[in-house]
Image (tube, rainbow, N blue to C red; front, side, top):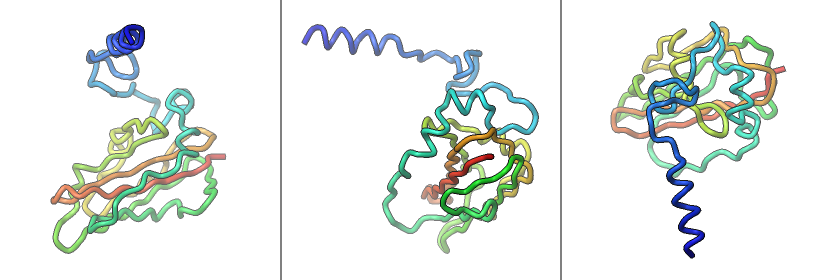
Length: 167
């Protein structure tokens, strides 16, 4: 029992709660490093953040309720979706009659670790209550999962995954 407690205590002490981000630079916790122009996810990040593992992970189950919806218009989501980079991403938000979409709550999470890459997208597009369109999304060759989230003004969350393979 003492050995188990000591192991847990040591592991807890090893967790970095400081303000260094994932890139090791002092920044917001979980912040990502700057990337070359146009890249949403770099090849190194795809490996480090286990992008391909995220592709194979089953989608999270959400309770059914009255929530907003996210429709992916481009690329057309199909099983075993394959695209060539750069490619277009177009998303349509659909609100329920009793609440409007809050574009400020929009997030895009990458891979198995669900790393927030929202600033990399919002740098190129304006997210509105209707959605957004990005013409030249740059992601390296491999399998990837992007999880998009948005809330309405009643804080109900819509979530939609885009799984694709870049050739």
